[in-house]
Amino acid sequence: MKTLSYYLKTVLMLITAGVIAFSGTSATAQTKKATNMKKKILFVVTSHDKKGSTGEATGYYLGEVTHPWDVLQQAGYEIDFVSPKGGKAPVDGFDLTDPINKKFWEDKTYHNKVENTMKPSEVNPKDYAAIFYAGGHGAMWDFADNKEIATIAAKIYENNGIVSAVCHGPAGLVNIKLSNGKYLVDGKKINAFTNEEEAAVKMENIVPFALETQLIARGAKFEKSGLWQEHVAVDQRVVTGQNPQSAHAVGEAVVKELKKIQ
Image (tube, rainbow, N blue to C red; front, top):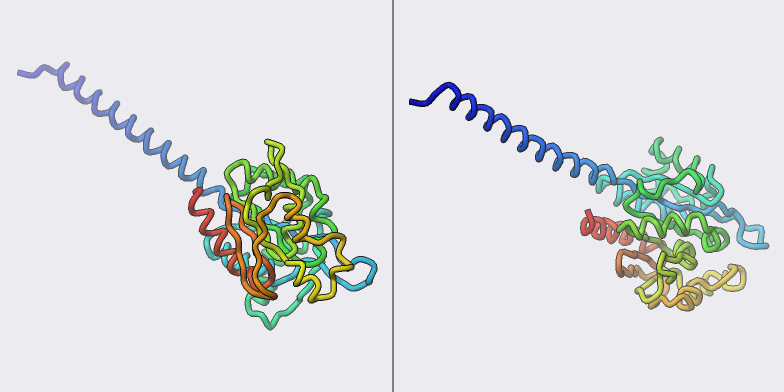
């Protein structure tokens, strides 16, 4: 005949097992929650608003922000904006007949974000699963030499994140160095606005450097297609696109890469 002591021991064992199982479940849930919390992507836009000494206005190219933004926010990611100077970012390619541009511009939250970008000093790289450099000719003047944003990008990348860019956005990749001393683009397949495309828009003698040439000098395995053709290169968590026509596809490629690491 089983004693009262036996039953008490059995109850205690069951309670202990339940607590352990609950703790394990709770820990797993917390781990999943922590992973899901890292659903933010940092968009970099230019602060530069003039094409060299021409006096012509420039800035970030609207469609190169909106089309990746549309893909990424539909995939569940929150987007934050940073620029070299912070504050209102100058916009180029302003075309609200493009429905995606219109959708972005009329979204109060994101319109406010791009009109009030963060300064690099306000960014915590640990908050982001990816960084995306938007194009627009302004990027050629203030992306490459911005050490603060380059450091942010290197930290995101070395934290198993994604670095991405489109059109003139890869100007921001030119001087990113990793902790091993190598340039980020060294040995990787990289794509950007080509020398031929720069000549086609008669900007080859106005921009401060030739983007394609400089990326190759940094060790990039430069890929390209013909003028205005969609082209996206993906290599070791770096995603780059050639021109405005590639912006949507860059967003899709970033989503695919993020699924691999999350």
